[in-house]
Length: 255
Picture 1 (cartoon, one colour):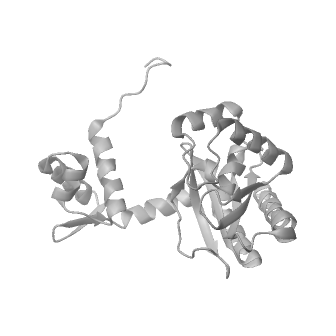
Picture 2 (cartoon, rainbow, N blue to C red):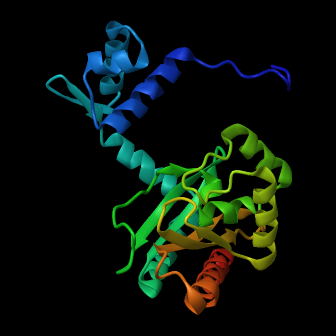
Picture 3 (cartoon, rainbow, N blue to C red):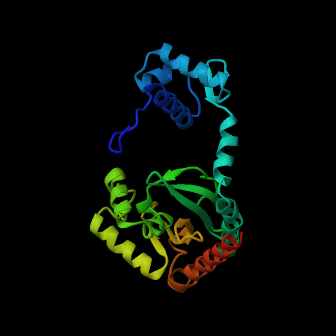
């Protein structure tokens, strides 16, 4: 295979993952339902389901197929496969307790953000876990923090691949405006989400680095917009997250 030749992909494998993703979105499903949404023959879908059950990745209750617990083991392995990822858990929990808000640690993969850890304080906007959920980088404080530390060519590639879809009226949808904000974030060391992902929610995010000074991910803290104002929002909260990020970076530098 030459350097410019794309690797060959397998349609059957792609179909299996499409079925897995659909089962996740639906919380389970029947053969005919899955076949209809994927525009596939029921016999084809059934063969994929049978294969995944045989491998231990699905379960079946009557005519309903669901994801199996094997994915839980895989997910935990992925989340802790890098030591800094495992170390980030306690610091995320510390941020939630110290700020009484929702704290997250997120990383970038395939041009999307991924929540690795989430903890909720007393003033958290929502309390359910979104671990593993993917999100557009340009709409969150954590995502913009990460983008601000990526090479310019990589940022352009991500924008070209995923676009700048608006989530609220405040979402940045202009490439030039986003690039200008990323430069500001790089200079000041933290990012602000001004109701760009969810109406009524603001956040502050800070990038974190490994010993090689490559960005690992970002910590962020979110709370209702009516709480995120004044000196607390403009000065105190960024300082709290920056201090936590520094502690985290120091610990991983010593491991």
